[in-house]
Image (cartoon, rainbow, N blue to C red; front, side, top):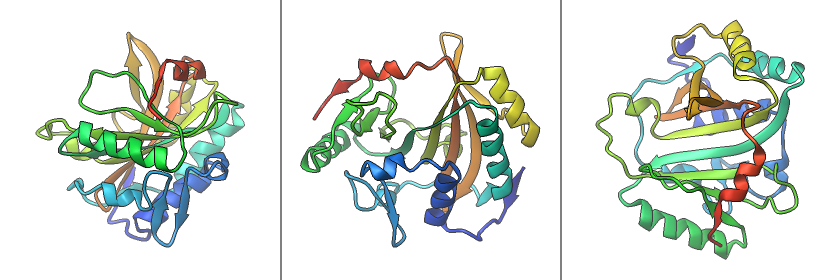
Length: 233
C-alpha cells in the first residue's frame, strides 16, 4: 500500500534511503554516484535531478520504509541477492539525439566509459560505467525519452529513477516474496521479452513528481548481455 501525503522525506532523501537499504556501495566506490548537499552527482552531471524538468502530476505517495526494508531483507535471506546492477534515470527530452550527444561528451570529458544498448523504442538506452574487469560491476542507466506523453499512464513511469538489482531467483520466487508484502494489482509487473520474464518491477511510489522503482532481475538475465552494447566513448 502506498502512503499518501508522505512528505517526511524530500526527493534526494528518498533516493538516498532506498539506495542505502540495498547495502551495495560499489557504484559509489567506482566514482559513479555521490549523494551530497541535496544533489545526485555523477560523471555526466553534477545534479542529475536537474535533468528531470518534466515531472509527473500524481500526488506524493510512497511505500513504508520498513516494508521496503523487509522486502529487500527477504530477497537477501533467500540467497538470491547479488547486488545493484544499475541505477537508472529516465526523463523527457525534446530531442534524444541532442541529449545523447551531450551525455556522450560529458562522459568522455570525465574519462568514463559510456555505452548504448541497441533499441528501437522512443528512448536512447545509455549506460555509464566500467565493467571491463568485472561484467557485474554496477553502472548508471540514462534514458532520455522523446516519445508522446499522451499515454494515460505516463505520470506513473515518466520521469523515473530505478534501482535494478541482480538476483538468482526465478520469476515466481520473486513474485512470492513481493506478494508477501504488497497486494496491489499488477505488482510486481513482469517485464518480458519474447515471453521470458527478465525483471519483476515494484513501484515504490512518487516523490516531488519523480517515480521510483525497485527492479528485481530474475535468473533469466545473464550479465553477459552487456557484451552486446556499443561503446560510444
